[in-house]
Length: 191
Length: 403
Image (tube, rainbow over all chains, first blue to last red):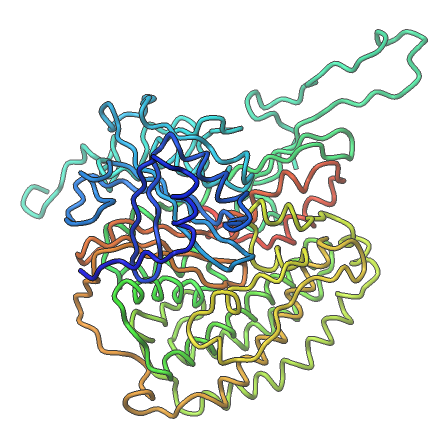
């Protein structure tokens, strides 16, 4: 694998501002990712938005990823080096015409098949910085069960309120749980 | 519309008004009750299955809470379980009014993941087809927006022209709505013989029509009265809510990925980024967003004309419509996020590859999903009749919102 090119000018600024915080950085096909510890997320995001040299005024999207059984080795942000879940923020600076991924890795502390609250699957909401984060964060909550602290209205958005799972987790079966799981398969012989 | 409460299916008084007891002589003002009005999910002016719960005080809307998810088809879960090629038809069904553009974004993401470069002819075919689709999509938006406001005739004109474009699409791929024409590494077929002449014929026919639409609807006094100064999005709000496409450009911000983060061969083409200018009302109102779409159709015509001049003739090398790829497409390990300018805004595909034949994670950033999130902010203290005008001006396609 080629050595990543970490020339992104924002990385140096973040490093300079947050002395003593351990960051990871990755680059693939010209797109740079900054991996931030979960407890520092809000500070880093506020810095990226407000610092005049960074000026990331536009939060394009919030993406959730589940790295259960992720097979690829040798990536700094892969499990082992990272965690089970990731929340990725896609930042755009209109002024500098620059893009940056910010990634937070989270590890669950309990079984992920249910929908019970998990105290370690929490991360600070950035809705106070970008109100547009409200719906994407709701979607990540809906699909992965990651809760966002201080979110103004954390409800499920695409599935209904009483939905019994977080369906994009990798341990959720493709055909869903419940009625379809127990279907008897009728073959030619047994029919 | 029916008057219901979300939970008890009954209208009820949310808050008792301050003041003297009802029936006493001190009371002179007519008291109104706040009422929850349910609009949708089956409603002609919500453009699909959007449900909005409106908190109203008489004719005034105090709050509008959108409820989405009625068309959720688990597209992202499916994306993690099918091969890259197999996912292309699913992208058609997200934004079913601009299927080609959705195909393109997904293919571009897969190509970036695989590090594939396309021949020039393939790129030009894609631009021509996708700009045609942009015109078709804006035509639907224009026609149905008139319908929302109460003007029936423009709808028929818009669909007449759209039909022409659908015939052109039928010529290249046989389908009229869900094309799957663009594929990883190019397109599925080359353009048929004489196709570019047909496109030129269409442009010659279509371009004068835009002035006709402007006479018919755009500068109609009733239409202006209904849309000017309604649903204003200030610049600051547009950025904070991550709005894109005609919605952010209508607010006067020239953010167009074709120019700002160019992909394909857009840097070689000459076109203008259209922004709203507050011609008949405040900057960023419904009319501005509508007008951006009308002017963008002209720009799309300009782009297609240049492509027809520049496209290399069919042949090998740069004249090929695709690159040959193995049937079992396995890109490198990594993650990419590719954004393109769709008719409705920025569509992004996030693909994470583990080196296998299927994406590990496939996420679509739907433009209308983000654009719709500003609805509540826009629908504060507006008249009930303005709500369809506002929803229509965002130009939602629920297939893309819910995925």
